[in-house]
Image 1 (cartoon, helix red, strand yellow):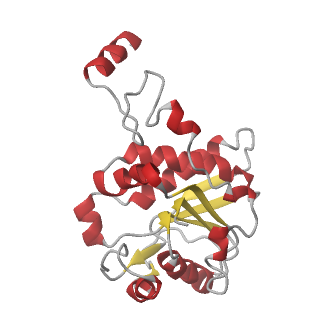
Image 2 (cartoon, helix red, strand yellow; image 1 turned 60 degrees about the horizontal axis):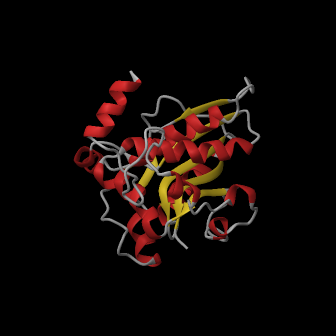
Length: 237
């Protein structure tokens, strides 16, 4: 099997998603050099980190975690996930983040991805936040080997996007908030609704102004009485 894999890699070489160099047989998604230089935030080890300060005075979230800084060529993996259908890279980065969140002490954690409007989901074919959520789940479970009491569930149907909104990319903070402030609502068709006080990890790809995450977190806190933390792949300084 290894011989055929080597032959396949020779004919169709894999390339690093960051620098574009050819990957060796044992490398996945990133070359060793790029992997070593990954701009990790280490926010999981820092209380009152810069990502948490984004929400001060706006939304009562418990913790905010981001895996890496959205900078230089490290924008590429996120772009590949969001716009070019590279689901494996999203699961890989999500798992890396989830492994670092194994420090969370709760025995039962729910992961809620930011929902896409159905029109955008049909156009794209998937919700990148759901891909990340599954990766985080895998990482949390892998990082808690031996802790049989922990349960991790992904709840993609807890919230729904009721209005189609334009992309947030070119908008400033105020425009982003106006664009999403009424875009989300509780989903009455959700088959499983955790009890009040449950710990929810709300996840998305990039944290910029936090408008979308704030809108969703506010619903989870005010309508359900949940404790909410936020996790994203990247953080924009």
